[in-house]
Image (cartoon, helix red, strand yellow):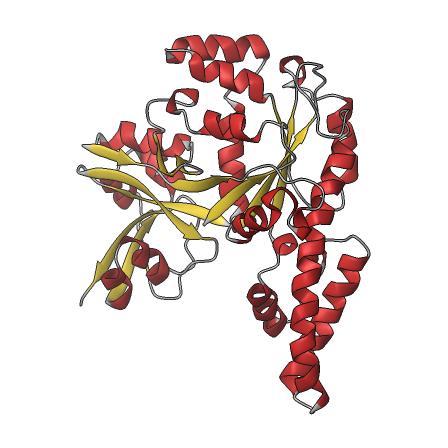
Length: 364
């Protein structure tokens, strides 16, 4: 699962990506490794795993991760191939969610591609290019489906109706994510269309250092604009985040953050938000060899969660032994939680909850 960083040129995308790539921005427990020049696997900051490490004292700790993709700046006409637009749009299509960076700071030394700072216009520029690309996709699909629909094919008729609803929204400059599937069949169809504007989005307002805590007039404009989108807005001073990554010690970074009025780096907030945006959650395994956070989809069953460790665990699943994170921490160990009656045995139908500490029994 990947979240792609998008935006106009010179809004701070690559600087933000580089901040995420520097483990010093969070702590020594949050390493980062680059798979390709523009894809990073970033550990998800989670104080719960630090607490489990403190209680269990394992030989090693493994955190949950999220993939972040740095996508080059889009420009007007990208949907028609301007500025290598097709390549960039293809990169976005391969992502599961979008992190849209908007410039919300004034600085005469940093050129804006459209001459002045206006995050509302910038957002619309990106939205329109993505919507135009989706419109092209929808119209091509409609051409194929219409012929089958005319023959009386019920599935084709249902697909045509959904395509027309999406097309109408796009023509009104609304993203595909505003179309709510009416049933499971439409959900499956929507997924198959692979529309860029159907992907969930969060907005990052890149502000100057003095606006990192409370935002500014540009941030207010963005919040007002996206209030009906049910999208999260994160305020981040990318320049300050870059300065934090240059500091050598944890103590120096904490002093810097305190001076700014922040409790933690904004990069940490962003990583957790991206994880949530991708509809991911975490369960833990805790033993003397390893304390580990495992990433699963929200709504995953116990066998599906077991399958993340190894496919044999899912195939031969017998039961899951579960202690909630809060109970584990309250009683201080697996043994004491068991004594207190907080140890549960769950079967194949169990829906894993975020933070569950689990062991699996299986037989292959």
